[in-house]
Image 1: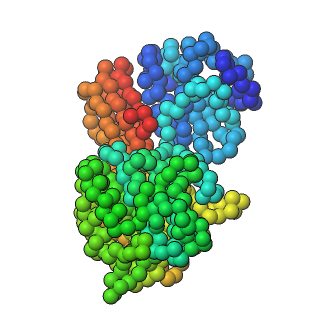
Image 2: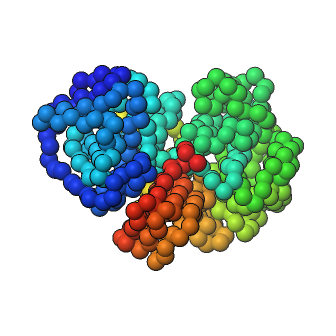
Image 3: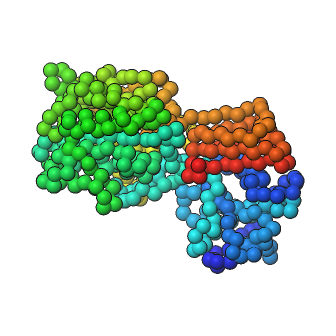
Length: 472
């Protein structure tokens, strides 16, 4: 494909396979054009896509050359539909042109991405993709596959703890656990770094603290900034939870992660910190300080199942890698249970060789996101004999609504009429058997997906605006 970065985009070797037309009132604005394209995508049953809109206003024409056809920019709204956003080019794509004169549209198939070197020529208008990201090495950056997820009700906070135990027992894969979960939170779920509290072994002490003679360092994601803030002590854990008790609100979500050695003292599970231990009641007392609306907890250490009874409370999901009388399983690149948990999120087994990468689909209900419960079920199915993961959700369905990115719910609009301007914001939005009346505007702010089902209609002069996560 030949590209002119400033004025035109020329597509070669495109065969005109089909031309679709829809006759309606004159298309006076982009919002009406957007709704035409959204309806086309729905009618075609396209399950995964990224839709781009051409914003180029510097040139008077946008040329798509196929069978001597030329589309003038001031006469059409131009879109580009990527049907396989996670694969290399060239793969199937479509160019969609909606006439500003009469609302008719034409669809041309292609195999090339039209992005010019000029920034902001093609902007993402809508996404419906899997929420996984792929990487082949823990030291690499994460690359998003599609939609990222955040808790839209409030803020996401996290506490990451690797006690380390002592200078001779602090294995390097414990640190890898922390790195992997930290990068997952910041890169996939868009946690703010200031909202993640990291307590690792001896904290900021530069002396060696790993069993291999090295120091843990302070940078967990390779960006050159310090991420480890505290030593893993009872005092510091108390200080962190005191701070979060003042920050969190009922709209917030807190994720708590522990790795390291566990132990049993007098038949009671304990978590090893840095040269001290913490028992379930002590740990639960800290967690109970939080004012967050939802709390999720993942514990990987040996005997971690012994912590769950003390941690049980309303609006919590709790997971342990093993039962109260079992050892947790570790290795490289990370703890076994965490390996499969993160694989469920990523969409592939994280330590597989790039040339033998095994894909993963843990999205049991096919809603485009992997919930806390779905991650657990995939990890549970894949850990080897000797480790029995434990799971508690209160209420029972919370684990289906909650992911590491917070709570994701769905709004269903059915059998109604939109008689006044209305804005709806939710993770997933489905509309069917509903009409938007003349002169009314319906705004849909979605975190994951919008489904325009059968019976959804818009009267002439109405307006539909769909805003993906990053735009609202």
